Structures are given as C-alpha cells and as structure tokens.
Length: 466
Image (cartoon, rainbow, N blue to C red; front, side, top):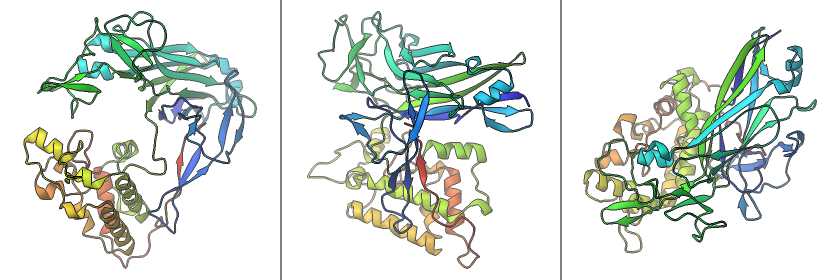
C-alpha cells in the first residue's frame, strides 16, 4: 500500500478572534420537547496541547463552558488534518504509522501558510495597501507567527494575524495536523507622525502601524458611483465630512488565506491545500444564522434542486429554526423602520438603504403594529407547527426568490426572510436549494407514509477545538 494523493480536511476552517486561551469543544443540541427553544450547549471532548512541544498530551471534557477568560474572549483555533488516498483507493488519516510504512517520518511533512488582510486594499485599490503574511516551508513543531507586512506601514511595523503550529504526532495521537490560532481581535491605527515606543495615546487602538504620509487610508472616502466598491459602501470606521464618510485609518487583525502541505513519496512530490480564515467571536453560540456559508457550499456542490426523496421535514424545520433564532436576536421594530421613542430612521436598516439607494419613500416595511418581536416569533412558531402538521403549502409562496431581491414594492419587501439584507446590499433570500427543499416539504401529501429522517435532527456540533 502506497500513498497516492493528499487531502487537507476540512478544506475550509474558520477561526474566531480572541485574546484568551482557545475555546473548548461543545455540542449545540435541540430539545425535542422545545424545538424552538434555546439550543443546549454541552461540553465535548477537547484536545489538550502542550504549546512548547506541540504535542497533544491528552483530552478532557470541561465541566463548565466558559467563553471568556479573565475578561478576554476565548479564541476558536481549528485543526486541519492531512488525509491520504492510498493505492487501495482508501481515504484515511495520514499518521506516523502510514508514514513509517512509506519509509518516512513526520519530519518529511512540510507546511507553508499564506494569509492576508486586504480590507484596506479593497477600498483604496492601491497595491501598497495589501497586508500579507507568509511562513514556511517548515517541518518543526514550534509556533510560527503570522505577521502581516505592508508597503505602507511604518518601518519595522507588522500586523499580527495569529499563528500556526504543526502538531507533533505521538503514539497516542499519531495523526498529522496543523493548528491555526487567530489573532486577538485588536484594532490598529494610522498616523502622519512616526509612532513612539509603547501603546498609542488613542484608547481605541493597540498600536500605530500605517504611515499616512505614504498611503491614503487615513482620510480615504469612497467615491460615489465607483463600480469597484462593495455594496453597501462606507463600511469602515470614519467621520462624516460634508457629503463624504472619511476613514479614520483603523485596521483590524482578521485574515484569510491558504495552508499548503507537501510530502515526497517514492520520488513523487504530493501536495494539498486548504483554506483558513478568522472572523469575530460568536456572541450567540446557541443560535445559527438563517443562511450560512455551508448553505452556499451545499448548493454549489449539489445544485439548486433537492431531490424529492432527500427533502425531509427535519431539514426544513432546521431552516425555520435558524430563521426563528435570527429574529430572536433582532429589534424587529427598529429594523422595520418604525418610529421609536419619537425618532424616525434610528438605525441602519433596509428602509434607510431603499431610500438612499433608489430614492424610495421612507416607510416601514410591514405595518408598524405587526412587528413586535413577540408577534414575529409567534409567526415563526405557527409556521413551524404548520410544517409539522402538513398544513403549510402556503408558506413557500411567501418566500423571496433569488431574482426578487431588488423588488421594492410593498409586497416584495414583505417577502421572507424579512427586514434583512444579503451581502449584495439588497433584500436577503434563502438559497435556491433551501427554497426548493421547503417547497417540497410544505406541499407534501399529508397522508403519505412518513419519510425517513423526519425526526428532530441530530445535535449540531460546534467544532471549537480547544
């Protein structure tokens, strides 16, 4: 048996910023008796890492889940595992034993990581504003800091973007793994005067990195009508100066990029890569957004149509549950554009965006009296109950289609999901695959034999990997 190909699994791992120790694993479980209640968070088995040697020294199940530590948010630091496709056609974890059969040791595995933070570059379009960090190739088990370089930084200044570590395999834990630990979630600044040693006088930032004499980020503003801008524009910290939203020159320490692994077997060099990223902490860990990256990937892999025999009630219920959880975190009266405490247009909402983008009259999306949070949650409860009872064929008709996101008619704005925008700046729609699944379930024959998989879905596991 020989090693033919390599894979990195998962192919995409998202960490979360935090200055505390890595978060422990846990499961988010649905209570079958309260399917729309808060998910129960239960501790799960978690690796214990010796940061000095890079070894996994054991596992533990914490008695209590803690998302902060000494007032600091605990990060989510995922593992990426290397898998091998063997000559027998089997895909299995790459381990010390498998390497030994090929006459190799763990030192034969080499890693390279390339991440970047292109948020400033995305706004300015200036190549010198790209922030990138590259480490490797390396085969040791020491932590390797991801320090971002940028041409427009002050001399000897770099942006900390976290670290990576090749976990040292042992007889007990022989798998080949890399761990990505994101940065702390700090904010950094810009100045026209070279910063002195020590912490900046600005309480909002950890350090001054960006030389505002060389770059334009401090004082930058998005030019109206620029077709290269994200929608909506002006999504950075700034001040209103005349008609322009002017950048304060802040930087964050999020990043995303690629992890490469390489192994030479019998004179052939095998390679694989995976993707990593870091985002803000999850402050509602017992809830899930109504539309996620996982939904996009599922549609990309399997297409926009769910086969009839694969559309189960459990899947449809999970989408409704996530919609319920999303609404539970919203101030629906404000998001609807209601007058609140005598004030009109009190927050960034789709109502404001409709007016700013198209000149549509500013008016609430739904009737103001109908959007009390409790009333909206009751609506989702009724939909959930109707789906279970097989009496919800009407529900799919109120879902927004993917090509209706720009429909600003009163009826179009009231489609579901309501009050929320997608990444394109217009009204949110579920993926075509999600809508198709819900339609198949909502319109099923209520007297048909029960399909497999109609029970409450298995618990969702939060892969925090501490």
